Amino acid sequence: MAEIEIRLPKMGESVTEATITNWLKNIGDSVAIDEPLVEVATDKVDNELPSEAAGTLIKILFEKDQVAQVGDVIAILSTDGSATETTSNAAASIPATTAATTTSAAPTSETAATPANAIKSSEDRFYSPLVRTIAQKENISAAELAQIAGSGQDGRVTKKDVLAFLANRTSGASTTSSQTSAPVTAAAPATAAANSGTSSLQIKEPVVIPNAGDEIIEMDRMRKLIAEHMVMSVHVAPHVTSYVEADVTTIVKWRDRIKNDFKKREGENFTFTPIFIEAVAKAIKDFPMINVSVSGTNIIKRKDINIGMAAALPSGNLIVPVIKNADRMNLVGLAKSVNELANNARNNKLKPEDIQGGTYTVTNVGTFGNVMGTPIINQPQVAILALGAIRKVPAVIETPDGDFIGIRHKMFLSHSYDHRVVDGALGGQFVRRVADYLEAFDPETSL
Image (tube, rainbow, N blue to C red; front, side):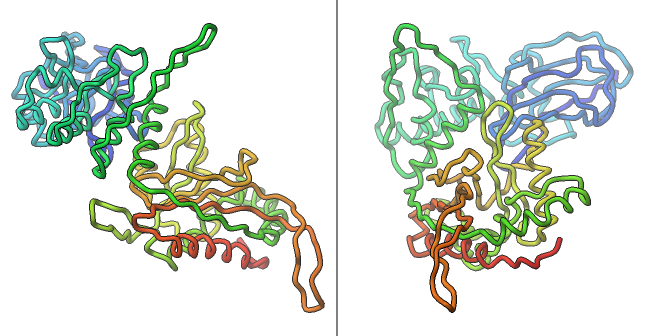
């Protein structure tokens, strides 16, 4: 019987594992090539994985809610139609030689050193092959491994948790949580702080006791990831925010004039977002040191200008799809990219590549009626711009015949930046330049 191993593919530069959220096929079902086989969730995005071959599904090696590492065999197809196998537990279903015999996807050296799937400890706790490999290399005993508070799915220990443990062990810090008996854990923020590379300080959350009648709502998976990412960003980067008010009256009047014709011609709306992104891309070209990342003591100056835009998901969480090479697009191209990514976000159709590679982020707090905001930097970027609500306000208008008071459309731009590498002069000049481009918008622009 010819068998084909289906492995968890690489889904991004920093993605090393994924949680199986739903199998779209059952044992015995026929599977066509490129047909959706399984739904997985990473720390970036939820996604359907298509089958890389055609056949009959005879083995499912990771059940729902189990975590697989990149390169792990997650299912087996038969090409002759036989379906005699049943769903197997990930800890015992694949022989140790499997990782070395397949040619469909090469596993990492860490996963090849151990059995291809999660291993259950003597305390009935699962550890992934990557975690076990690191533990063996660093001489972490089983007792020490059991003390590590896991921040992964169902409390599983992740690579980040083990690295944090090693950093703390080296500095003499204890890794045992002082609140293990508390009903609320603080593993994620503490892990984020330990992994920042800037301090060994352990951040401990307060334990909150609910009062009578209070409702306890557990964070969903994405909210937990967002929380950890935000705490990490604030801990790593000293945030500074500069504010500029921009007069966008010309833009408002121009958009009112062209939006109906654009809708008839293109079949979609033209929002303010493409204009804002165009101005940001122009300002980045003027101030390229805004378009950087920090790695230790090195500054990585990005060649491409990939602008992320915060978008709301149906769950209420936020995600940041990315417009690649935004500086190379005209307004029509930006409008189509903005609408496509926003629609895919609302319909949970974003692909992993849609949210990768961002070098600068824009978030529109004005959508919620907010005048301004103090956004948190989307690591590993060093700056983020919040767009406030456009309001009609009285303003002094200067003319050759004198000054007078008139009604203008104005908005605040709030620019948060990493003060390790972006000083107040650069951060302030950049946001002022964005405002200048908005105020200098040509009312004769055609689409």
